[in-house]
Length: 582
Image (tube, rainbow, N blue to C red; front, side, top):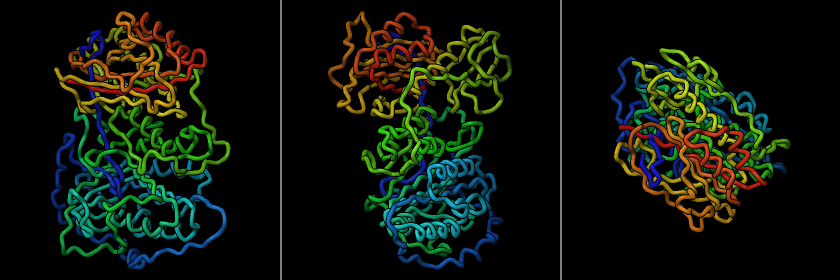
């Protein structure tokens, strides 16, 4: 890629994923057919007749009352926190084609249950519903029992990991795309698609009834079929439920719930956290700590452990959760996934943390672990440093040897570079880049707003000859971070120092934001780059000298971090992964 100093290499954007609710209570999910971003999801054909069999759950479901009157909770003085956790891997009618089982939803539920209990949230065993326990009837019953056991002003937490879906819009007819979003429970029956699921309108209705409480609703599911980058070779595990046509003569669900349009207005007492920020994208499962998970659930658990409490007041606030989840998930998933939290940008407390949950600010003394790699069809070059060879998809980098060349893929399946051969001097810079990115990730400071790095052309796969336009700005100009440093890490591990350049007499302190980078043309070599932006209170002149003297080689991560925090300089660090191809 070409820029004013001819040092910006190539690109490649990632998948984006969708899961959850939109402004009202739009539940976002995924369809199993994969299409490019912006296309219309493929409508699934009706399932074969052998799906039409008794669910085995109808007797249980009909025991639940057919209406939901407003709950009258008991009342006592202090407020507390209660949770209902749902995780579904195994679906009763999964056939591997129209409806597939998952691998990480139960792991999500077990992880969140452990962390929520550690956070002193009331979560009895009967409110942890996994697989066959997670029927429509059981989830509704558990929700109602939780509301009854809570007091006005208490916090109710509902987490769902599993399939989301879509169906033709039913009354109230409120969807712009004529589709209701749904969450699909264990007993969802593709031949009776209005059974075993709950719609966004129903959720809006029951949340409206619980207006005397604070509600946090986290959904790690998806309903759409789109992807940001169709070239990424993911694990194939998507939380995809599909679109189902509901015929007018279809009987109503066994448990009738109140419904209310989710397009009218948002509910002020409800905090919605969705796995993606667009309803046309899908959510892949990923391996974290050697287990399949949804990235949203994984990083929400980290937030509950105190890592998101930037102001150290013992509460997780909406704005803290928003910036923590967005930064961590976008980085981990290489911009394949960007979560959404609604309402945004306020300081309302969502969860109270227990005493002892301490936020630790960034430190120069960071333990930088070795990079886990997989090598297919060959061996690791002798002398390769800072690696851990593994045979699982937990690897950060995959080296695939084909016909003498080596394709290098990241953890989300994007090709980041192609190496000519197995020479050590070609492999080591790729490892060094991955280690530096991990080290820089530890320097994201929750006490400050995230740096806004914007790519006008978006996160698609950028093609040869396309011109890209980047801009950089502080999250909040009032924080006084206006001393800018920019460098790019190319797919092959080459470091390209971009700003400030002495030969162009560029000022170390930027007086006006956003700062626009020179237009960048996509050229070979193609792959994945990472633009790194650092904004500090004082110019990081030692860092500038270090980068300029070492490029194209990458300095040791410890050297960069030492210069970054020299003289107690206050800094924020941001990264932006982008991808290109022919």
